[in-house]
Image 1 (cartoon, rainbow, N blue to C red):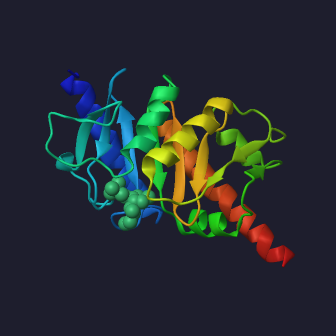
Image 2 (tube, rainbow, N blue to C red):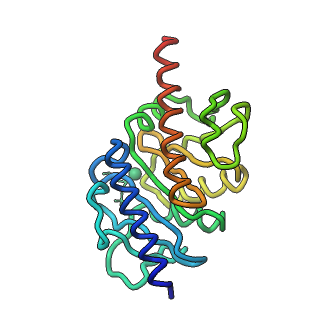
Length: 208
Ligand SMILES: CSC[C@@H](O)[C@@H](O)C(=O)COP(=O)(O)O
Ligand SMILES: [Zn+2]
């Protein structure tokens, strides 16, 4: 079983994240899903289909790392497996956020298939945990959008086991997944990605 106090803290961090991300326009309507680690075996995750700007305690539930609901009859996010695969692969991950911003959606549709987006030379790369120079290369793979979530989870799990320092990925025409040690790290990563995506789109516009 899980510790109720730890669950309450995790759930509140998810509710607060929803208000922030919805407010920035990065999680419109019922899009997006969020999670926070409770312990080695459990995470708190959003219930499927809930409005992320209006989350309340009943919109967050507990699942184990196999994605099974724990002490709840609710249906967890349809993309729960995309969260659990990261907690399984990386014991230090404490929070995972999936967002649906306009910039992530548009940029992911413009990028060529088969190669990750390479971000290099941006000072803001240092907003990512463990990156201390703009010269480092931030690689953001773009996976095709599919309703086959177990397959997407496998692809993401394999890619990130080979690239453990990279902090996020795009799903084409869909959105961003990113993670961090804490919810605060994870929110900073979303914000940094959004800035970098805007820079990339602006660069494409100027070069046209
Ligand atoms: C509003 S459509 C978005 C969904 O298809 C999905 O991609 C999503 O982000 C939210 O799904 P959910 O099951 O509520 O976690
Ligand atoms: Zn989504």
